[in-house]
Length: 540
Image 1 (cartoon, rainbow, N blue to C red):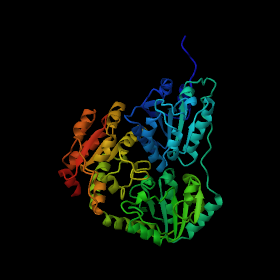
Image 2: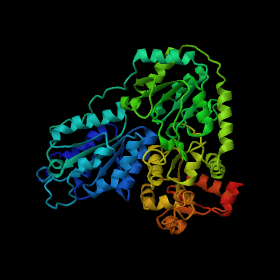
Image 3: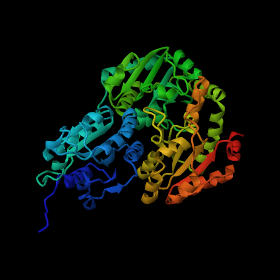
Image 4: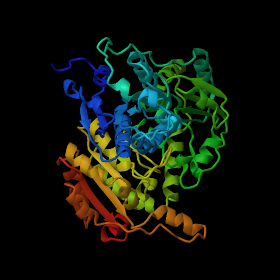
């Protein structure tokens, strides 16, 4: 007679479904197969990447677009060391990710007996890249631990969470456990007294400025209302792009290390910063200390962030959307006339005049991308086009533009992240911007995307080198060793993996291929070679 008992492995997928999980990224292994037993009984889709790091990056892209946690099933040992880099990127950029792994049986933990995939401590391994890591010692712990994980994703600073299940626990009986999601706490509201003080400071200001980061992605309408009431220019960090719509007269471009932005911050008598770390990775190519001319008001879900990096005159802990709504109400009907639009326009013009040649070339590329694929989600790697467009690109909406040049800074991120983004928003076009070096970190994920039917435009900037590092070495008089790399025939390689692939020779052909990418069921790889006729046309 068949065993009809519900195992912990089967139970966990039912519990995930009750929390609204619709998609899992994973590579089955001998230690995790029990997690797959119950999947057919749920509505959860499974996508198989070709490397655990790819699984993590796909989950990251999915989470950034949807705001929901990306979920991964990862094998013990090498699976966890492989995904640790992706968890590091998600941790640095406050991206919700749930990583569920196996681990050796409870009586084998930390024994050093040479077991398959054995580590001294998986939990210690991922402690620095997760909000918390928990070893499930009893199936009965799972409802509580899962509620803790989803509380981090919903109500705290979202970051990866790791749950590991010993091999003897994963097969243990779980019939007695409820698969119903626990009620979760709501978002944390800001202190009303602090909001009133912030409103008074901002109403008295003659030259206010707003800085909005990725932590404010859900507060776009509220921030726009505050900016318009105060007539305050708004600078959006890379992960905050889209909080104000493209073409809004109060938008400032560039990065905070550029002199036009530095001058504006120095001249301001009140700065409202919402959901931003003021990280140095926002300041490529030359990070500089920030100097504020007036009071700095910071709003952040993480109270420790409010006392990290910069001294803040008025720290306000709380959810960005709730705090911005309260602040908007506290401001009342004030309509300041601080010349905000003129100040923002002056910054944009000065930034545009100071941009280096690559910015103009890749700006033309993004104009073509935007024309061919309106409302596209753009995921980028660490590559010249991304560094360039970070300075001026205005995303069509929030959660539409992100890349690994922020935070942790990993190569190979852009390709799987773009695939995860497309899975999270299947009705929108998806574009990956990546270099030849970064692509070779994760090119195998093209096969995953073909298998999963993911239509994404993969735009490769091929300069046959680690170009940014090569320039960095040259500027410092360092021998350029290890940066001129062999690159394969990307078009031929992509076709062998089942993709559409091309090397366009004109701007018109480039635009045509971008348009076609949205109608296909597999990735479209578009290679642009530095020094080619197409690169020259973009430069012109």
